[in-house]
Image (cartoon, rainbow, N blue to C red; front, side):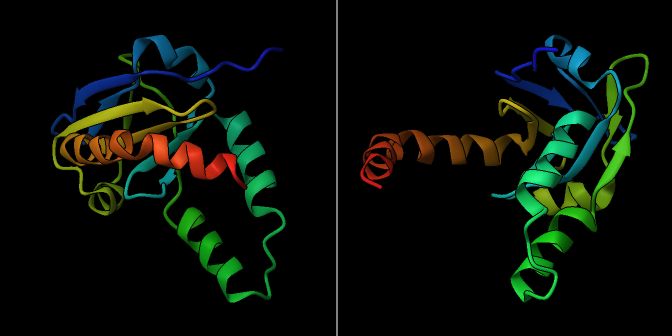
Length: 146
């Protein structure tokens, strides 16, 4: 089976029950559910189950349990992680602790990240995106020299 590629940028608003819609074009990928956790850069990361399993194995499987930093990364990712299924309107409920971590109040931007999506506070995403775009050439140059 071919893996779906999650792309794009979508603006949504949380409802009063802290639910947010998964973009219609991406919903089929999340038909079996969504793993949601803290992401890096103060956003939330949402994975379809198959990609969550791959992420866990590839990115955390080799983290040594005897290492303070290994335990710290595992705690960061797994302590706040939740699993949810899309409701009939294609929404997931985002727990208050995750909303607080990402600084999300009402307006969000969802971005495709190839194998998962990120959920950002809309204003935070706009600020981050502007900085990222201004530094993209320098970052590409630096990475090409490694």
